[in-house]
Length: 220
Ligand code: DX5
Ligand code: ZN
Image 1 (cartoon, rainbow, N blue to C red):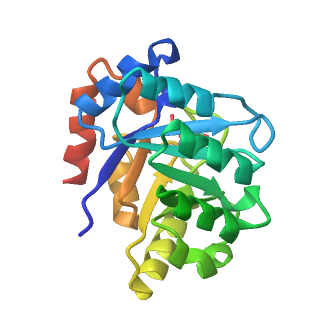
Image 2 (cartoon, rainbow, N blue to C red):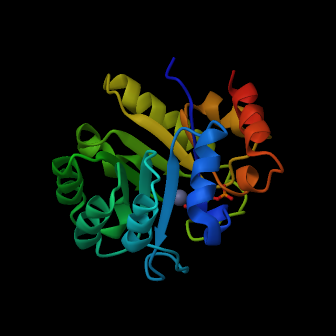
Image 3 (cartoon, rainbow, N blue to C red):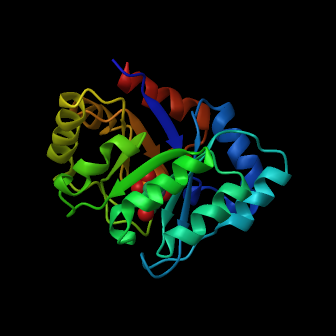
């Protein structure tokens, strides 16, 4: 069984204290930071990008950061994120006509390679690039905002993704993002996910450490 990983999404943290929040999330038991870049074009919201990641690095945060690029112009932004200190970059299948090229570019940079699919995107779409990725992100909401509810149709999709990856004998992680809570993480894990982005249900907790323990207890 693949060990589960918890990835706090700093979209839900106090962004005025980004560096402290990242340290606190990792100290509490988070495995890595999920960094949501939005451009108000691919998704209807605007967040932060490579300059903010660079500041976080300059401020001394050395933990693992996975950049979730919810943007168009993927080819150009990948380079900026690498230079700013990303450890892993996840792009959307829907964001570029040249998915394989973008994945190859991430691979060549030395970063881990992630590919996200929106809820309506069939898994057939990514079948021929599965060899090029380390992680498949099955979106469990429509991206753009934290605090939404998981779309139930994502669960059978996760099951199907798990079968596809196992049948091919690949070592590709299955990540989920959106609406993951203590109350549903077990069902999502049972469907086949192993990497869990947690935003509002993590950062709304009084104690991040206790909340992280609650997630881990559900997964045990
Ligand atoms: C939304 C982002 C998510 C978001 C999840 O588009 O990609 O990472 O932070 O937040 P919750 O866990 O609150 O649904
Ligand atoms: Zn995200």
